[in-house]
Amino acid sequence: CEYPRGPAFQQPQRPEACFPMDTVFSPAQRDEKLLAPPGEPLPEQPHTGGTLQRSTKLCGFLGTFGFALVWIPCLLPPLLVAFVGLLLRTCGCCGATLLNRTTILVFAACCRIALWLSVWIRVEERGFGVVGERMGRSGRPCLVIANHTSFFDILLLVALLPFSKVQRVKMLISYRLFALPLLGQLNRAMGHLAVRNSRKTDDDATRAMFAESTGKALAEFEEYVRGGGTGGWFPEGDVNAGNTHAVGLFKKGGFAPAVKIDVELWCVSFCGNAVTWHAKGLPGRPARVGASIACLCDSTHALLRDEGLSVNSDVDACLLLLANQARAKVQDGVSTFVSEGFVGHDPDA
Image (cartoon, rainbow, N blue to C red; front, top):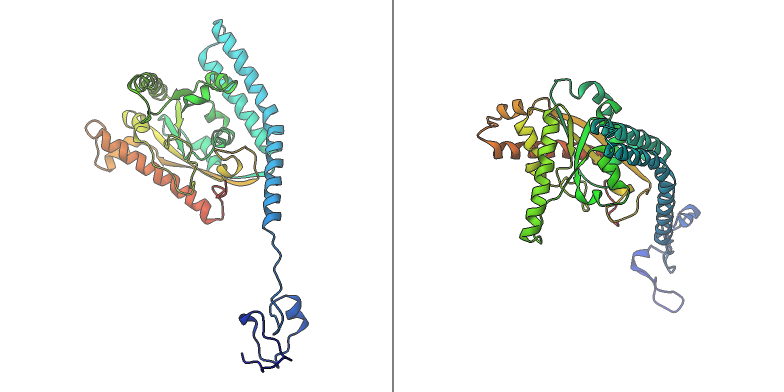
């Protein structure tokens, strides 16, 4: 743009705002702040970042408050059943199976009520409607695995599985959950088993102690599945506190029951749980959550045979194959949710 020289004319404050002198701007263009005439600075755009941040924090606070208001009362009935049941079990007046299934059923019912009342957490489930008639139809025991993105995973899984199936589930969970007040007793009453992965910082004595206790839990888990029960665990081992759109590596050791026993293998995909309850934050933030379940195979032994593997001589290869295929199945579910606009985690958390 060229402007006449002289004191009667003022140079534009921004080069990009240069237009020929005979350019006429309509009122609409000025109102919409699309163009700025020569000699006038471009109007400043309003800054909304602080407002949005305050609004997000307020929503998170209200969600956490509502979560506590809804979920704490809903967890009181299963806690009461657990305490009474454990007392009766100590006195020999209640069997382990009756205690486990009763506590799980009450817990599942309360989780459904709490989830229904948590209207700011929108859950879209897929595949759980056919689980009641399809799971176990082959006559084999069942294993259920899922990606681990949040502490909300277990609450959602229990709420979505049919009562007829969830009451038979025994899970491998972190030993730390058994050390928590109240929740530790609840987990014991439901019959879940505590495991701990070895760490590089462990000394030999610590590693040996936890290896023994974990070995006993895995043996009990395998015996339960062999007897026709349903087993469940999170093969990633720990909560994925990073990018939940990418499923972490599955530890192959947990798939030993699927090699020793011919089972159905079901895969659950979660997306959005880490938004409503981040591993390092408070629960209850508003979120859109996706949960899907799909059967990887009706027979793990048939799947391994089709891949040319023997459950007797190729044990390590069988474990690796099942872990990789299960992870790929879960990743497919997560990727589908992400492609539809679901957000698996809060990048600012």
